[in-house]
Structures are given as C-alpha cells and as structure tokens.
Length: 338
Image (tube, rainbow, N blue to C red; front, side):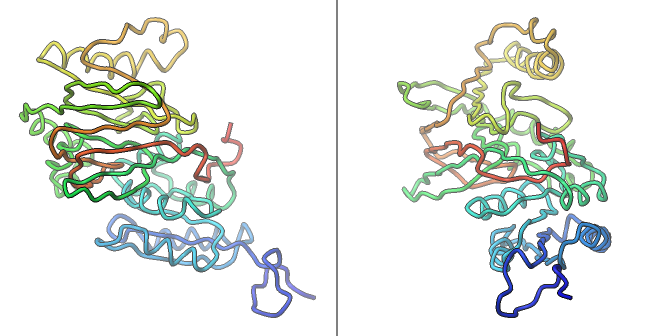
C-alpha cells in the first residue's frame, strides 16, 4: 500500500500525492525558537502536513532572501515569526506567488496582526490556526520612492507609509529602550520629533483628481487603520476594501494638537467603534484631514524621511503609491473570514 502522505522523488509522483509543507521564517532576536519548533512539530503532524522547513533572517536581510529560499522549496505556506519589518519583507517577496502567509506575532507592534484581530500572545493558537485555519485575501500597498539622486526603488507595505513626524519619531526611537518597555519608548521619540518645527511642503494628487498643495506636519498613507494601544488612526480604513486611507496632520499650535488628540483618541477610538457612536462624530477639523483613494502621488520640497510599516526607508523627494486589492493570502482562524 502506498502512503498518500509519503513524499519521494519517484516517477509519477504528483503534487496531489505529496503532503503540504510549511516554512517558518523567523527573526532569531525576537523569538523563542525551541518553543516554536515544539508546537510546529505537534501541529504539522496533527494536520497531516510534511516536515516544516526553517529559514532565519539576518540584520542585513530581514526576510527577502529567506523567503526566496523557502519558495524555491515549493512550500504551501510561510509562517512569519518576527516583527512588522519581517512581516513586510516576507509579504513583499511572497506577493507574486500563490503561497499563504501565516503570522506568528513576535514584535513590539504586530500591527497587521492587530488589524486582522489575530491572537497576539498565544503561540499554540497562532500555530494551530496556521495549519488548520482559512485563507483571507487582503490588500497590499505598493510604493515607489524617488530619492534625491533621481533613483527609484519599489516596495510593498501592509500597514502604513509615513513622512514627517511619523518617520522622525521612528528615527528618534531608542532601540534599547524599545526592547525594555515596548511601544512606550515611542513617547520619548514623539516628544523629540515635536521639537522639529519644519513642516512638509507638499504637492499631491489623489486618483484622477487635480493636484493640490499644502503644508503638513505629517502625511500617513494607510492600508489599515489601527496602531498600538488600540489607537484607531484611520477609522474608515479596512485591509480588504481596495483603497488607501490618507491622513494629513496640519497642527498650528496647542489647540490644533488638542483637536487631533480628541479626534483620534475619543472619536476614532471610542465613538467610531459602534453604530450609535458614529452618529456623534464631529466634522473634520483643519488640523486633521482624511482622504481616500486607490492611487496617491506626492512630491516634497526637500528630502524627507520615510517609513514603511515601522521601519526607516531613508529619504524621499517624491512617492507614488497604490493599492493592489486582494493581492495577499493570509491564514486566519477557521470561520473568521467573514
């Protein structure tokens, strides 16, 4: 009798005869590898999958090389064990392949996992969902970044891209402090960034609309809207709506910042989460503007720092970004795709 789950190289063997195989791409700094290996071994056997393959990221390569190596092995699913930067790098590399992506949240932010409402601190549940869950198609943000030397590079992002205060905050974040106290390390970084009074002088175009000019403290383009500490920056954003949500922060003093905090913390964070509460949302204020579309281009008057999913990506003089609807297939717990 032939074991249908036995994988060999005999002639006549087809993909249907071979067991599905997963790969784990992990950041060795952020994970407890022996614990993950033990749970994966149990779950892969229970689900009838083959032996899982393992690939380690490095400081110089947060995921692309490991993903390419995994894809060369014809894996069915890639489990990402790392922070937002690792997830972004792996998603970028896997987006052109028919391979599911499973998340094993292991960083400070875990922003994509938060926006998908996945379990953050339950290793067994996350890995069980990877092997037994359902697939959910989500959007992928793509961006072309033009540098001061006129070179252009292209990247993917899953959560947000930002220029201004957003990027400066990341540049000012103390990595050692972040490792010790997590997202609270950003509070100090924000205080430093706020001392910078320079505003962005921006010219932008949304979809087929006309070009507009403005001054802004920060421009953030989001594929989804929630941040750490349950902060809902973009209340109308959804990871599978086929659109990007852009927020323009234009504060001009204490009152403006108070308006922004009220809108984001109270209205977005509390009122917007219920149907009744949404009826009490106030009109848009000058200091905080939202726009929504599929394509967004922007130039700035001088090189500005840019971040993608919480990682610094150098300086940009212009960007072109768009959404690719349903481009990525992500594993979620069974019966949670609706």
